[in-house]
Length: 165
Image (cartoon, rainbow, N blue to C red; front, side):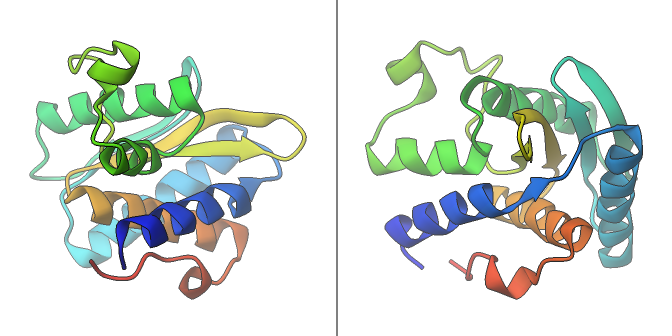
């Protein structure tokens, strides 16, 4: 799949994967789904589900480091700023050969346009939070989140996944 196809598919994911609500129970269920998927596959990831300004679920699996938590923070900052997935923002910048610093003046110390953070949009309210994974290559981080959101929303993941690079 090429860059333009990936951009279209990520935009589709962002439009289609909307929650009916985001409360502590929904965050717990989504975070638990992600943790279960990661444990079953032996993945070393950090998982964060939040309403902007309020952490709702956090887990750091074995073999993760404080650096993974830092990546979670920076990727979720991108979602909070742009209300788009960090992977989608990164792909858009790549298509234009730009960076967050060049285009928006955003410091790499606080923002990372790398895959793994996805906007949590609520029907009728818009983007109110994010779900973030760090520990895998960026495309795999992104897809793990999309897979868990599909499971939470009872959507067919095969209809929305990104094909292998």
